[in-house]
Length: 289
Image 1 (tube, helix red, strand yellow):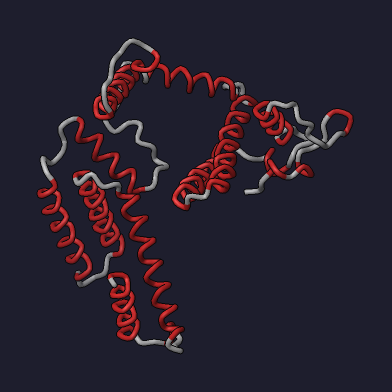
Image 2: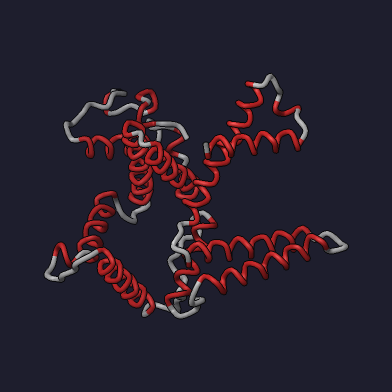
């Protein structure tokens, strides 16, 4: 995605042909003005003008991940930049909504303030909450009340509101959590482990079938991953965080194998699998040393 916020050449000409964006002294107002300029037909940025909610949505998700990446790196300069990019996404969506006559960015902000005040009566009201666990419970009660209110508008499911755009592993964990709230849950991790073994057996059968059915194999793999996500929930482990850490560990070990091979005058890609596995073992030993 282009970075229109930093390219004056793409801001489009203002009144009298002025292509600059003079500062008002209010960064928020400048951002809203900038977004309006970018979306102004004839003088704005052609790329920004042709965008829709659907075309921008993938960038919104990407920016959220880049914020997370900066946090994991502990890079505050990068975090400041990425938070700006994420904020820009909100302003972009709000501008498109305003053009369509739905709402503007100030409506978005006011709605957020109202919602947060309603959800924190222990801060903005007379309710007393003594610890984090009590706050979490109160939060769930309020969310349930909100869903009940929506239920009056039509049929609803306990699974409503779990966003489709979430990463699949994260969504699986949230779906099982929602189902658990209405009693559809195992009492402990042990039955989930048994279910996982069952799914692994079914996957093995699909793989060993005389006629290869790729769709069936994919289905069984999906079932297995879904159970793994549920197992993570039962063990109070964030599945996304667990897999992210596993990815980082693999990258570190793989890079270590490549470096070790170079130090021995070897081309890692030319080594046989058993030689590569020996390097893997050596790298793991060095980690424990």
